[in-house]
Length: 578
Image (cartoon, rainbow, N blue to C red):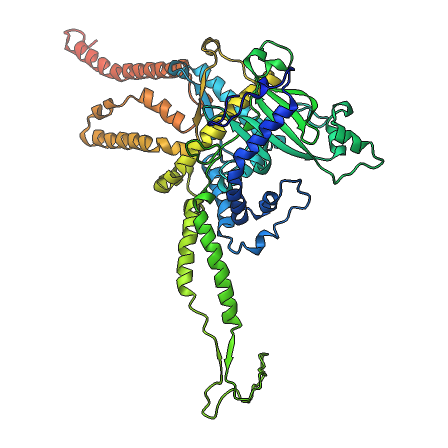
């Protein structure tokens, strides 16, 4: 592992004298990763207070959370605008990027020539079907994880996801992909010199009985063994455990090995208290964590979220809401001003129906007045503006348009909100490069590593091309990228048909290469390959049509030929009577 952005961090796998690095060196890197993350934590804490109050308690302490509560945040968080906007942000990302019930991406050959081959397209269609089947297996937890990921991206800007192959269990012998959105509170990543996150430290809190269930007794550290030696081991004492995942050095990487040396990534558990390993070394065929980020800045390790973009508005709204609540309380229960004439003697009844004698003078003017508390209208206008800024940051305006037009198709939605959807385009690009694209690559590696029989057989020509592929995103937003050119082509074809109909000259349609345009339109609209004719079937259909056309022409010519022949017979002498 290379150093991150100038930090004094050396390769973990080169530390120590044995095959595995010294656990103290791993903990040293863990400490540096915590230091790199610490400047961001205060912002995340405030974002949680305004957007995800139930996360706030987690940022209050670095110890195990046994009683999560949001009561502390209620002491100063008075406005719920951001808390209501964040789920809408998640919902719009789900609809535009990964809508349930739709295939929002597919695989295709990188080579344009192979892309035109029917059997290659059919193979990638089958491979895409396999990926979606494994993703949306109920035990994979993909839908739940992606929703939690979008919430994390909106609040913190960084939302790690663990992706692995499910181990076989008595109730799940087949195994499959498994996804889990990880709490950012306990995730400490590091990046290489290119800014790619390739190292992750995961903080875990476990009791001694829990560790005994997860690992063999001989692998446990001294402090855990001492706790287990008690008559009744404690279920409230938590031990800090670090799961470190980092790249393997090239001199130890052997892809042909039958041991974990064949894996490019190492995983190990370390006890912080004893600085001892727990269990043997793990190996990973690919980095087991996806780390999507909403937006990044040059040299930044963590993302920049919509909540951070509108943090001034969230703070202002909260402060104004607090002041307005106090002012409203004063208006509802105002401070009273009374003259000191000895009549009321400080006794003033405020209960309904009570009669205060002496509260007016002889002329009927009241002797008691409410203290003026100010006007709420200017504050309401400012509050509305600040809330609008928050809603814009979370794309709530776009969400409202989508909700107001539920009957529209995905294409119509994109055309209707094209200008506002442009605001979501950078986020979609980040999702594709940080979440959706890496997820496909790692899913294929995991399937090939654990269940290669689930993959469809690869065509020979694709084997020769070493299986090179690329990802085509087919979500509603991605389809909108082709909507303009598709609509332009169809509009021109329709206009040409009208010209040909008006002039009786079909040559206006000669400008279009329908053999190229129709397959590409079908590809843009995600039409399955199996719904299209193979080249052989297409040629057979055209040959049959041409044959039928020639036969019809022969039938049409036959009556005219018979008439000419009859006329010739009548013209010959001696034959007319015959």
